Length: 257
Image (cartoon, rainbow, N blue to C red; front, side):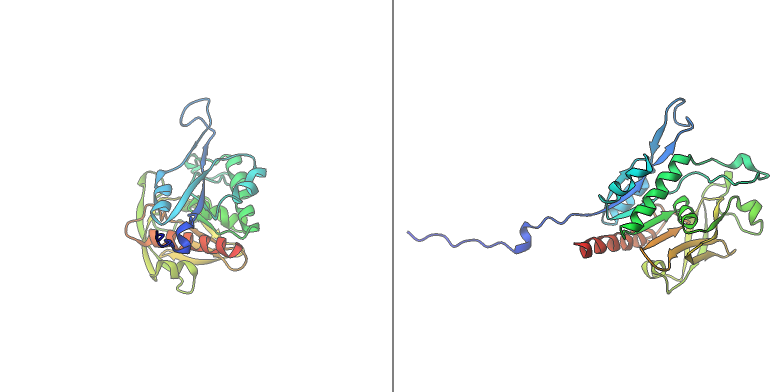
């Protein structure tokens, strides 16, 4: 009796493609804001939704001892440091009451994540606070309160004014400029601190008033920072940025084998 012909499936039919894993560090409330007497870890769901929509697999990284950072970075392909609270200035400011201080454990953990990702050659994207931390990590400096340090600057969403929008101009020869595909961009803005000096990173976008709005690494492992919020910006500029970041993280994983 004749046997049925063997069915041959394509070689890649058995291949499970692991999605590009993007670690998102969590924010730490150690001041009892959520509930007195308890420390809470939290994140804006917009980040996980935006990363997933752009083709990545979002994974939360809870604040813990900095020594855990290398093991955590080994499990992901790219790192996203989201927005957060405020860095405290070393000297008193006239409007010091406006500061919502970051916890030291938060800063130490996120710095350790950045260092471990850089050592592993994995891309890092910093948003708002994340961009400011990248600049400090690169030896840069901050404007701690724009109305005091840059009284000539326009409103960037300081205090009760909430989120505003303004235009930024991107360097077309930068990775961020190529990813977004526009020379100018209308961005959302809700910050009163900003990068004053990018250190060893280069400035690739500024607002009309000269405030630094994006930075990226000149050499070494890829690191990028934006002062606006691509996870919630109107239009597709945010999704293009995140998709390009995720694509780069996935490509570097494949090269590492």
